[in-house]
Image (cartoon, rainbow, N blue to C red; front, side, top):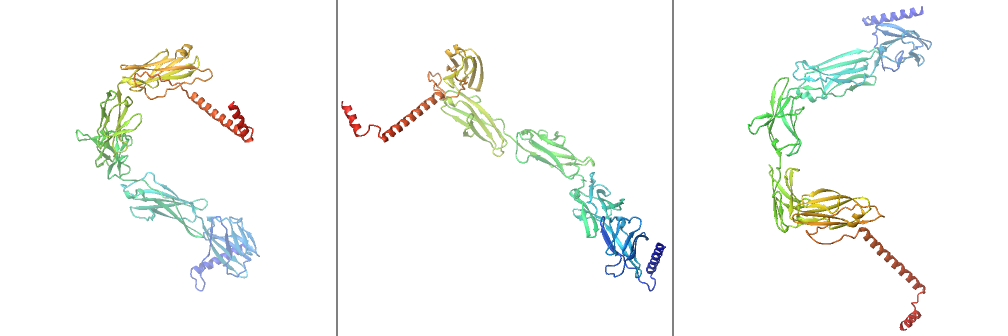
Length: 596
């Protein structure tokens, strides 16, 4: 009965509200509901009356109004509350002595009017409009990877923007290069839709379509979501994206790498470029010097002409042709001249110079280039610069002047562009020996490598006085090194070995003396070049002083000096102590002895 009375009272109040809304004379209009704003998941505090109200709400009923239908959800009796069965049963409680109803776990479904009816001391009614908010997730933007053609008759899809789980539905704004986009007939179209999730939250999906031009190839697009929270208005922006824009080429041109002066031997790449997207099909042609016609060159899979290594024959006029496979339009680039700087092979005259000792010789160097050349002459074995210019005069030649001379022809204006030619000057003479005599310490029954080096012109040949396995190596056109492998036998120790070098002008020898040393490890002696002996010399200079003997002499001298120093110190010590007969009496004794 009590519940029926309450429902009747509410219906009467509702009728009164309708009458007020209908403008019944003499009755006041229904006041606007109090606004309470809460974020999803938060707690709403619903007061049964304005904050300044002095009424007694210890006896009140709370209703939720959904689609204009009130439902009793909570009772207050003498300050004590009790929830009615239903969706709010576990989420309602009282505070502030029963004047405030607490609703927890706010969801979008809670956005409605809540009605409080007080009973004592007189009937009072208070309406509350609960507003629920939730910020959407970060907007996700997906660009149209297939791109848009500027020749399309209708706006093409640029990108799609998605904002998930917001409440209420956020507003979307599209931007291009930070400028907002508005609907524009046949130019810009924005199509938006929304989905209501089971949670009551909204997911927004917006598609931007636009008619683009060539100038939009680098344009930055992004979307912005605007939404409200109890704290105020907010916004979130997506990342920026660029959509592929397809447009025909208007110009093609050639590009050469590397830039700057080119030289023979470089890797050179010639490629076509165009201002269209996608680029047209390219072909590269070179002018035939004989017919003056342009002939197509073979390029790699990327349409690049690679010259490796570049040669002077690659110099000439080149041009590029671009063919648009969609429109079949053809574009031709301006002709571009390619210059490959070069130096021809260097020629030296005479090519094989020969001369007698004491005479003079002139070497001349020649080469061609499309640039100014500089020449210089170097000694091959030392690298020393002997002269600048194409001519090298050699006067009063000694045997030591024989050997290699190198001419270098270079282009100062093109770094790294040069060519060289080596020529060997031969000076007639009988063989020169690197060493006249050598001594080696050996062990019996061991295998030993004996070496002998000789030079001369004509090139000498070498024979050995003992049997063994011999091999020869050319050091230069006038020098030869012979190596003989032998077994150390008693006979070999007794006779030693002799190396004989000879040519048409004479002969010369190197004597190798073998000494047995059973207390030392065999040391294979390596020849070192000494000052050359004169050809056919009969010098018997012996290099028998070994480093070990020099060391012994130094040690002996050092020991003698130390002994003398110690002896002098002892004598001085005894003299100071007065134990030496060097006083006056001692002197007289010595004089007497002398007189006798």
